[in-house]
Image 1 (cartoon, rainbow, N blue to C red):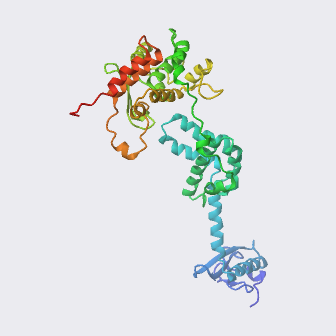
Image 2: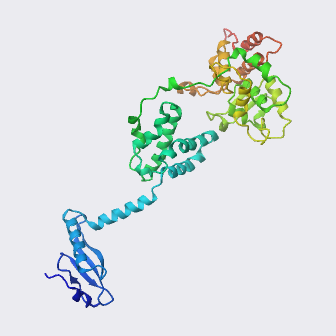
Image 3: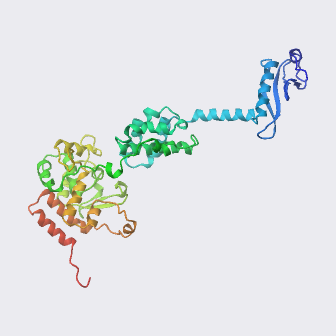
Length: 424
């Protein structure tokens, strides 16, 4: 069949039928509403769907007869290879749209943080979660779209701190994994490269080796420390906080966030609600005489908080006690390190052990979670009355009342270890 001529195409009228190209099977010029204008179409059977289809190859005269022939031949070559050019074009368009919306890692990280943050109660954890990503990951992979990230990219982020700061590196790895798991769930990426990044990094030291406990003050020197640095008359929120923390063996956050509605002066109990406890269980703390005295002095300050920050009248920061301890160079059991506020819980626990207090009482005083599930199932009481003599003995030891510490402890032990009668 002869190829259509320009003369015939220019004289094509709107009511004329299809004019076959003549050089490519199925290719024809379809007239439009204007004389001498039309649209090139190629009719074919799709090798993919097995259905009849019609593809547009451009308009005449913008696309001339020769150019239309070249396009048609290329189209036919793809069909011979089992490729449907229209399907290929549609897939390319989908990929282009998808690529336009796939977020960069830095944007994905911020989005995931915004979605997860409402479920976190710990303010410090909220800040650390995103800050580790901003500080370590974003400078290296922040500008890469999450579908393009490979294990080598993740290894580049982790390698500088993998052995030097292993705990931070492990947490950073978990947070990157969370961001990419979110991307996978949304169809932005087809795998999570963090799952195999361990094959590109050296083995970290075991957690047992790398865990560094909070420096604690040896319990035997606490009375002297109390006398030298905490027995002052002038008000100082830092000292009041630390004294109360030592006497109650509570966590820093529990004491700093303490409110007056948690205090029962009549029963001499501090009731910490479950939402403020690490284990999410209500914890009752028996209050010794010195602890009550501290609280009564704090009543002079108009605040719902028992130990408000002096300047902002809000919850004091953890640095409040840290700076005090550093300022007096508080000794600890860790060489060249200052004792920490949290370390006094360890000091209290050592005192309990060395003074023969039952493990159960000591652990309950610290509000530790019972790890054994069977044992936990039988924990129906917090042993408040049994713990009270122990905490009073601890107070007597710390503040060195007129009665010797040994006498106070012996007196407390009488309440803890009552002889059982034969009828029991």
